Length: 520
Ligand code: SAH
Image (cartoon, rainbow, N blue to C red; front, side):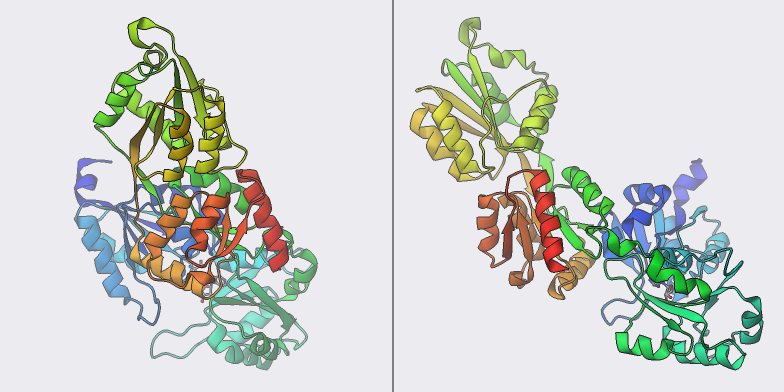
């Protein structure tokens, strides 16, 4: 970037694809993490918006919850204003920015102020929504061209579609923004001489968890669409290829198809679980209700390390989360402390250092640093951890717990029973923040039953979720919990609860599969 560009900022006109977050381009996905401001339309799905980091400014210019959309000239001014402040502005549009996306008009305005820009093409709904419904937009046996037509007239003007020319083309016809003019479009084609038996389709909310299709003939399409109660956004397709949909359909065959799952975890840990769920056809909304912030400088930590190994012949290090483990080593490094100092007690005497982890992922995190836990309880909860250590520990030993600032108190009594000293050291704080717009969308989806399950991996994720959403009817929430303690916390708010058989991520995924089968 040259100097001039950095002073002015820059605008990326990007397509977000038709809805499924897996259809974002790599470039748009990267920019979502780098932009200072995102200016987005109503068509951009909650699933996609949930991937934008908390610190990014989000400006909605689409129609939402009864509000009118921001008029185009005003959108143009927002882009210019934000770029002139020196911001990296991501202008996020549904599908492709140039396919009925008014991207051209925005560029004309940017050019006036000489603002640098790039265009990132997106996967257009005009092709992808058909594909997700098993309709190949062309097929050598049926059609050799396709035509994308707007079914929406400019303000104050009439719809002027050249039906006669279209009918002669014998190609696949794709109408965007055409649902309110469905009748007019069908009649236009019939009057122009198209065979009433021609295959046709209307595809609703394609590539999202709520995609539906109506396959009919030109003659029956209107009635079928009315019966099905199709709503926008939807696409009208006319052409022989529509007849292939039922045979070619694949999307609904995926095990988690049609499922929308909300993940509440620290963002650092979300992606693996999200990846597994997405690969099986689920739509995942990420709600990292917990952001962690390392406490630094941390005099308590320094003091704890200093006295570690000097209190008893057997000393325990206790970890209750992978983040706790990573933060522990981050702080050691920051203080320039060598792990070997921990194994050396007073007067350079070797101490028996024992290590406990609350569950498998914490155990794995320790292994990446060359430490193998001596104790991992069968059930993933603070009390079980305390009891397991209590059994294994020598009398008059000592322990230091390295964990979050507000950790469960239940861990302490079983330790205090056998040990002469237990030190509880806070390494990181948890913070809660969600964009107000995203909060509104998630609340809407939950209260209308459009989120099939919400996952919780610890009591603190439940607390974070509730703190973030605030006043809400939690009986609408289908909570899938790891461990009894997590479930107990969710129960406090009246959530509908399923507990995974084991306290592992694999077991959580399995539970979601079982639940999905039951819900279908
Ligand atoms: N730039 C967008 C299109 C914008 S026009 C693109 O390339 O996809 C908006 C119209 O697109 C809607 O009225 C609808 O006809 C269609 N559309 C967009 N996303 C859709 C989806 N997920 N399912 C069905 N139709 C969709």
